[in-house]
Every structure is written in structure tokens, then in C-alpha cells.
Image (cartoon, rainbow, N blue to C red; front, side, top):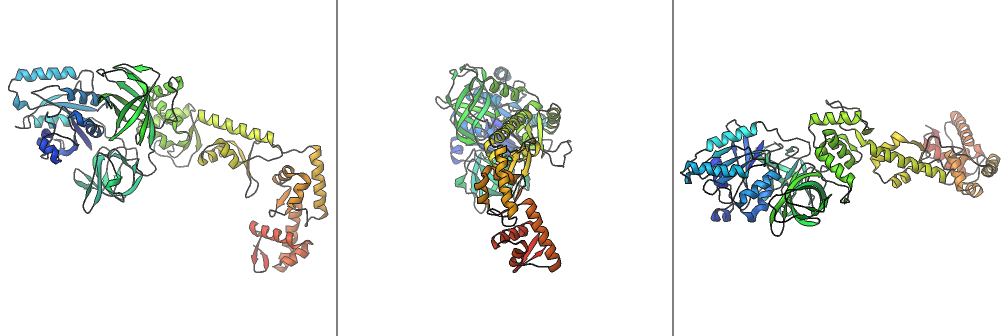
Length: 634
């Protein structure tokens, strides 16, 4: 499914040409019809000679409506630059051409319209020569010309054949599995509710899909889909799509927002981008200039920060960072346009390199400039690696998606990065795809992994030095200190550190070589405590009394070394005494089948306080179970 767009100066016949081709005039507003001038975006469709149905976006030509023009021209596959034969190149012709060049529209043609008004063939040749000169060093410099007249239908068939030829060799839009539909029109239909339209990119939409409109974060569901007024069950990337959304009112949606699926896109207020200042701009560009950013169908105010340059002269390029007034949805590789708010003019544009930069860059930081250059000029492996550096630990398929790599390039890039050990696999489910790798593998850039494991090891080592009588640092404490997400932390533990489950509450992380050792003074305290346990094995000192005798650190160390079994918050037995008590109880139950609290008390020669803690612990451990006033073996 392809979409073409018109461009050109006001009153050069764009809408009239579309009407002649499709039978439907794209100017739908009363004001447009009265003024005979396109104000808002118009839409249509037609079938090419080879049978392919294409969508058409008709844009305004008047300079006052350049924002509307930009909302529609970004998602097209080809352009028809319309120039009237009786006027030739005009101011908006030049501005539209500059915009098409900045957006790098894949292909296009020149429609020389109103040829019925020019009878002199030499004049037409002269006009074409002038136009060709204006097209030099732009994306349309080699574009074919077609002379047409909407009035007498001259050249229309040739125009359609030329479009067919231009689109034939162009690849289909990528399906990255995460649809986004920039909204260029929103309206309501009685009995159906809210309808939005746009050119679908990066994935499919199906009836019944849950959708999220960003950045307003309105949630809804796809009630219906249409492409060229035909109902569809599924809309595909590259198609002009109308989406009937239930659950969202028209008042909550505005043009420039994006229809997505939940969890697939994040809003941003900052962008890193390559920028080219137009040759004929009125003045050089300074750092911290306020601009209008146009990307997709959105428009917002931004502050432009020059990176690696103090000032930018006409025709020059530079890296920039944009700080946005409003959040938008965009991805790496999207093309954008910048305009100066006052005096209003298009100043340049380029391509977004990082749609989620980590922070505000130092303007002359060489590492930042090198990273951006790698993203712009690097191989698929370079681009994927930079996506990994930007995302941190992530699922492999997410990196491929954010790098916007096609399947063959992704396979080559992954193989190269793993071969060069630039990616480290934190976790890999067993399933693989036909590319020979698991897209659900949890990976991290090796440089980040090395930094993370060094930080973690140093933290654990420091904890051992500060608390030598503790088995290790509590897991949650280490996670909090590292300030990393749970999934990455758990994967790190599995790959790097030994974990010990001491009890249901205390979980620690230790270095494999760490051993708890006691000095002579500490050993003397322990010996004194153990004598008290030997004297009354089933009525020993309480936890509180034990801590008072040896101190909390020594007592906890004995717990972690399994010298004690913690029956409750107040009661502990030495491990050997606990095992002996269990043996006595098992022997009794083997003969008598059941036992009461009082009988257990008498068996062990202790008090009810210790017996209750002992029996309840056995219940939790699955040794016994309670049946009324009795315990029985499980």
C-alpha cells in the first residue's frame, strides 16, 4: 500500500489535478470551495494501471498554511510537485521543494499543469528548463516531467503510467510489529463516534486491538478500520487508514497525536538529530534559538542547542539537541523540519538520531559527537550497538526495533556483535527464530556489563570489609545501591554472584571466597553462650538473651552459619538440639500416631512457650500438620 502527496505553489492546480484523476475534489471545507484554495489537508485515492491502489494527500500551497502542509507530507512514498506552465517556479514552489529535499522523499515527478493556457511549445520548454535548474542538488533533480491539463485531460494517462513506474521498484514499508498512526485528521460520525486518519507506519492495526493515543494517554479500542473508504479487518504499514476508536471522545484528541498500542512507545521531550540549514536562509543559526519542530503530523516549540559548533551558516550541517515544550512520539530515523516562528520561514531539517537521549549533552563533548556520528554513518552492527548503549539491558528484539533494522541487516549485525563480544547475554529462553538467534534474549552491551559487575563486586567487597561477621549484603540493599531495575538485577545475580537463602526474610549476596571467622574474644563469648544451650537444650536462652550475651552481629553470624535454627522471633534451638527434638517427636508419633502440646512438652521436658514455637515451625516446614488439638506426621 502506497501513499503519494502533492506539493507546489498556491493556485497551481494541485487539487484540480487530483479531482481530474480521482473524480473527487479533495477540498471538502466550504471556505476552501468558496476561496478556491486548499486550507486543510485533502485526501483521495486511485488505481494505477498495474492495479495497485494508492492513497493521495493533497496539501495546501499557500504560505499561511505551511504547518498543515507539513502535517500531511511526512508519510508519503512519492510526491507530485505541481508547477503551473503559465507561471513556473514561485516562492512556495521553492519552499515546498526544500521541504521535500529535507524530508528525503523517496521519489517523485514534476506535473507541469495548466498546459492548455500555453500554446507556445518553446515557452513550455523554457519553463521546464527553468524548473530543472531549480531541482539541481535535490531529491527531485532526476525526476521525470509530465505535461498535463486537468481541463482537457491531456497527459493524465501519462502521469499515471509515470507514477506506476516510480513506485514499482520502491520497497514496501517496514513492519516492525509496533504500529503508529500520526493523526492528521480527527472527526466524529453519528452512530460510530470518534474517527482518526493518518498514514500507518511500522506495524498493523486490527479490529479489536487495544490502542493508546499519545501523548494524551487516552485508551480505547479499534472499532472499525477503513482504507480508501473500504472496510478492512487489518490495516498494513504504508496505508492511508481511518480508525474508528471506541472509548475516546473527539474532544480528547488533537492532530499530531499518535495512535499506538500500549507499551510500545515512550514520549520524549528531547531529541538528538542531524540538521542542515538551508542555503537561502535569512540569517545564520545561533545556539539556543527557539524553533518550531514538525515531525510526523505533530508540531511543537523547541529550543535548538548546537553541538560542536558556536554558530551555523547557511548551507552548513551540524549535530543538534532539541529541548521540546510538549512531549511527542518519534523514533530514530524519522525526518523532521524546523521553522523559525518569527519571521516565519523554513530554516532546515534532517533526521533524528536518538529519540531518547539520556540527558542534556555538553555541547563540545567529543564522545557525544562520536556516538552520533556512529549512528549516522555506521554499519548495521554499529547502529544496533548504539541502540544497546542507549537502552541499557533490554530484549534483543527491542534493540532491533529501535535500531529500525531489516531482517537481513539485523541477523548480520547480531552475529557481528556476538562474535566481537560487544553484547553479553544475561538470559536466553530456549526458543530461537529462523534467523538463528533468540529474539527474546535479554542482552546488555559488554561495556555496560563490565561496569555493572565491577560496581556490584566492589559494593559486596566493601560490605564484607565493613561487616565481616555477616554472611553478605541483603539482596534488596544491594539492588537499592546499584539503582537498577529488578529484571536486570536478578539476571546479574544469576550471572555473577553467589546467593544464599538464609531464611524467609533475610536473603544475602556474598562473594564465593568470603568466610565468616571469629576472633579469640568473639569465640569466648560464643563458648559461654553454647554452654547455656547445652545446660537446657530444649529451654535455651531466648533470642533477646542470646543477643545480650554475645551481641547482635555475632548472633546473626551464628544464624547464617546454621549453628541455630530460628523457630520464631523469640526462640532458637541449636541445630543439633533441634534435630534431636525432631527425632524424639517422630519416634513418638510413629508409635502413637498423634500428639498434643502437653505431651510434647513432657517428651522434651520443656515449657509450653518453647513447645508452641517448635510445633508451629514443624507445621510450616511440612514435618507435621495440626488436626484439632493434635499434631500428626504429614
